[in-house]
Image 1 (cartoon, rainbow over the protein chains, first blue to last red):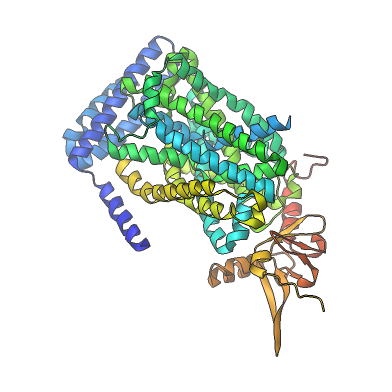
Image 2: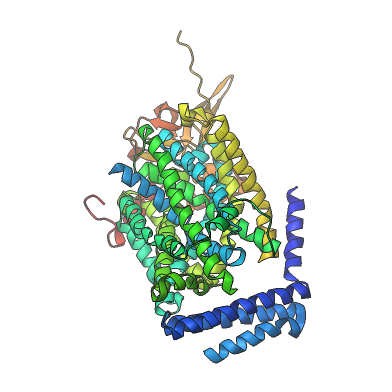
Length: 97
Length: 404
Length: 130
């Protein structure tokens, strides 16, 4: 029973390392939308004085780090098309740095 | 006075065990991604934890043995060695995540890289345990932890749709992204079922010299303490659902989680979030560090108590003195505390049956519990918890892969 | 003739916390030493408070490793600490003995850490209550 579970877990782990192109594109779009919304919200909050410049910078830095990882994952499974939304948001974040 | 102190043990246990870096992160994530749909998971987890905590306390009151003590004695060294290895691994990761959580809280308000704060936080943690007593650790954390009520105030200020929230208390199938939904559910349960919390509570009961007359108080403490943690966790889910979800913000970082406090608190939002995160994580790190010392001392029969001077329980003191820098080292080399948290919660889920199953045996052992053994209803409930914990354990890792 | 009292060793002695007359924790009864006698039933002669005995329950190699570490590093002892069963008073969820912890030699590591490590850390040897 233990061997069966270990084998199943290993197969699932290996399959988890290789995403389908559709899932890669979907995850990338989700991440891009989330960070885009975050940057919009953060920009508004900075302009209205609700957050400090250092906190805003933290958000931008975190966005760039996270989007870079997402783009790499998306590109590996789904190619440039999957990574395109992520790259667009990353470019926007780069201008805010 | 003693009653207040007893409840303080419940609150500090819930702040460390319930409301730590993992619970805050998963609650914020759950609210942002799934609205109020996951409230039933919190409710179920809370009931289970209340029950388990009460049992751990009752064991301490009647037998004057902690959970780890009794597991070694009742189940033998072979079983204990398995628990020891698993719990050391999990506790070190959790300790790393909690120290990281405090450091991240300081980073949120200063903008300075969180890694610079890690050695300072680790030293402060060690110093407090080195010179403090259990009362100071317990009462200090409880009082400071009241700041987490800010989440409740924020949630209330936003005028939550109570009808929607009530619906969320009923188990429902996910409306979207099923793998991520169940992964988050497992994460929430993993964040609640933290093995160190049960032993910390039982050890605390012994430190406070609870006895048979404290059994009714133990029940109140378990319910109120865990209830406090649950109210805060539910507030985080609801606040995140009302502020982040509608804007399409998913929680992949603490910076995003902090933004849930902007609408209710304006410019106080981020500092308040940082204060809540820092306090909860510091409380949790105290618990985990102490629990590692309790684990070794109780398992191997050494002298132990946070109320003794370090030279009176040298081995107890050495364990946390070594564990804290090791935890700090882990957070620096492993990086992102949120990632460490996610992984450690999956391991928590794996370890939970290892602790809960012997607890079921102990609560029916005449030698330990005498006339205070579980009734049939209690046994059925705990057996159900063991089954739930086991099922969660066997799906945790594949779900982590599929949903993460 | 007095009725012989039976002592379930595994339930009431093995792995239990050993306490001296003052309630000081000595260690866990990690192992039991039996003396095999010719033409007579074996009898328990001592309790072992030792990592070697404990880890040997998990696997003999782990026990051997623990014994090697003990022999190499344990200060001033050439065998694992043992408490003669003559000092056994009663068992149960704890085992009570009638000699002080200081006479058991089970706390050599505690003493060594106290004197060589804890005492060198500021605040380690403070007087008064904590």
